[in-house]
Length: 433
Image (cartoon, rainbow, N blue to C red; front, side):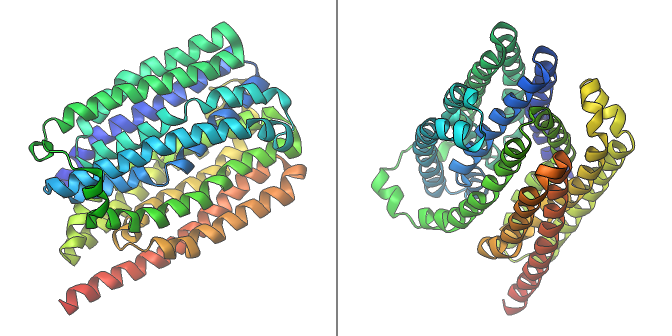
């Protein structure tokens, strides 16, 4: 198990770090090329595109990863998973582009109270098909355990992505940076698509294609939707909340400097939580097989190893960042040092989120997605929105950060309860069999 963890974590970690690292480097470059307010606007546009893409992908990334890993030895079921999820991604990407472009005017004028954001929002909507394609292709390569191809394609496209947004900002300011973001995302999607096609050619069981009617009538399609629908609905609850926090902050304060600080703090928190996702994805195939064959001892060992490793890595990183918060923020410039105290509080949220990610493996393996919505997402999102709506006008950035802390703790409590029920269900399954 540990050998599998380290082997998969190495390449998957390299892929994820190259993706997040390019985002980090790109944002650092834009901070130097744009003024504080313009970078704050770009951050909001970037978050809007990413949250919209994750909303419209409707959990296809986790769905294709899970079922490709499960049916890697079954050619017919594997074709159904790839075909159904791929078709969904294409349709959803086009729909996401159309919807975001159509609501851009209302978002800019009525929600953000910033008419100058209309054109950048329209431009950034063009990136929706490529962003959804990246989510699907990442899940496909992860499900095939081809973390090496994922890492190589991510590294190759990361440099081009940074170059695109940097050149755009240098030539045309904020508008150029947004155009660079669209171009860089498209390049990433094309490179990752080439890596996925090369990997699929090695699958001998995929030589024969299935008609769409046969795919639609296949029992695997119903199994896919049984998982994807509640997982996607969970995203419909979560992602609007995550977008509304900076949107409400911007509307109530009309201060894009706070938005710039929020973006940097959120980016650092994402990097701290990143190892938890890497470990969870590396252990997912082992968990799925152990759960499918009711191997309770193996599954519990995997769960405990994942949680212990996650707590050790994320806890250590969060502690270091909290101690050196002033120095961490000063890297981005003197204007960002004011967010040091808020960064320290955000590290509390980072540790809680990391533990939640490790526990979510148990919830997903036991298919308790509907329970997860009621026990974790609804209470968490309600608490976060209430805090931002009530306190952001008076406390600004601090209110948004505190909302993340409260939401992370609430989510951890609910996930811990569900994970305990999942373990009991697994042991009961073994006893009954």
